[in-house]
Length: 202
Image (cartoon, rainbow, N blue to C red; front, side, top):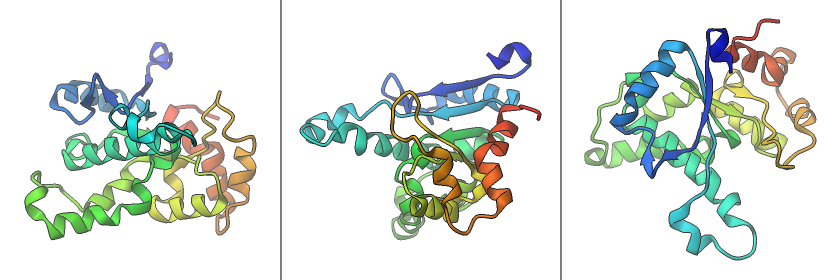
C-alpha cells in the first residue's frame, strides 16, 4: 500500500452494508481521505434490488445494473452535500461514472422544477460537481469518450480497462482514436492524470 510511503489509496463499492457512501457515519472516512490526499476508486458491485427485473439474457445485472449503481452513488455524494463538506476529495468513478455524465442536466432541472425535493442547499449546480470528480475511460467508443470529455473535461479522465475482466484489449487505441483531443490531453488521459492523483513522480 502507498500508505507505507506516506499516502493511501482505496477502492470501495458504491454502498457499504446497504448504506450510501454519503451517509453521515462515513464522514470520518471522507475526512481522513481528504486529509491524506487519498484517491478513492468507486466500483459498483451490482443492483441487488433489481435482480428480478434484470435476470435473463444479456447480463443486465452488469450491463445496466453496474452503471446505474455508480450513478446513484455519485448522485448521493452530490445531493447530500458530501462533496461540499469535503471539497478536496479525490474520487474516481468506474465505467465513466455510469449514466450520470450523459444525463446530468436533468439533475439541475429537477432542483429547479421540484425545489422541495432538493432539501440540502448546495454551493453550486449539481452538474458543476462533475468536474470535481474523476472517471475512467471505459465507455467503449471514441464518441462515448468524446462526450464524456465534453461533460467533465479531459483533465478528469484516466485510462480504464476493468482488468481482469476482458472488456477491452484496445484501451490505448480507444483514447488515441477519440476526436478533438490535443496531444497533451491524450497524454493526460493515458497516464499523467493518474500519476498525479497517485503521487507518482516521473
